[in-house]
Length: 293
Image (cartoon, rainbow, N blue to C red; front, top):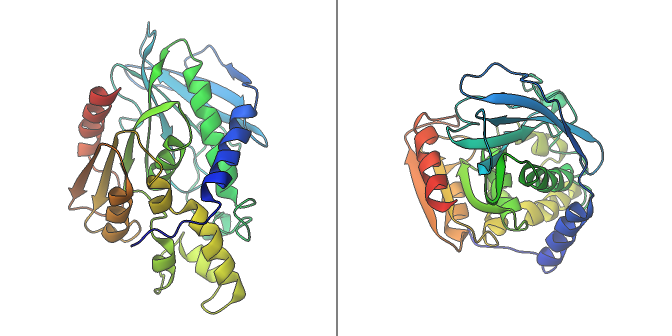
């Protein structure tokens, strides 16, 4: 998969990041332990995003001060990531939040009727993922502002959507110093959509714009600004990427293209696995962050 980067790509993302960085920080913490997860205190946290108040959590060990930290970005869907062994690490502070204004611990199974792939997809400036990327950039600044976190040692991590977005924001935010991207999404999407698509949520796009429709070209244009292969070319921080050899969603060829586009220090890990969490991610991602934060 070759890069097909729009002429105004860097201008678009510079403006996108500038808008997010111009937002005044406005956040509050609960001051209470709001989720039972051994080894960590988990506080509810709310902050003002680009369009609404967003809700999430901050997890840290008791007595934490100036620890390494990471932002834990969720996969596709409207649910919140609950604190677990993938979203926390011993000796680290971590933060996650819900992109859609739901509660920090909101649970919701994926339904195509609740999908958002087509929201504003007619233009890169209106596509929902632009606002989501900006909210993630604001969340990084919120994490950096916490007393438990060393502002110079922050990473971003995630799975699928969260993995792709971790790469996106690392290229345009000076907060992220290292990335762990497990099975990142949206790689080489013109090629992906040129073939039959049978799996949701990607099929949301082809349901909306069948082959041959004018809307399909609009989608291709929008996706070119958000294609993780293109954005990987701007991510210069150390990045660990994983792929699943049996992954039907973030297919191995797409993930390898993302990996190849990364210009900095990098590592590719291949699992004989589908599109799902792998137990080895816990220790291997921790090792990567230990080495680079």
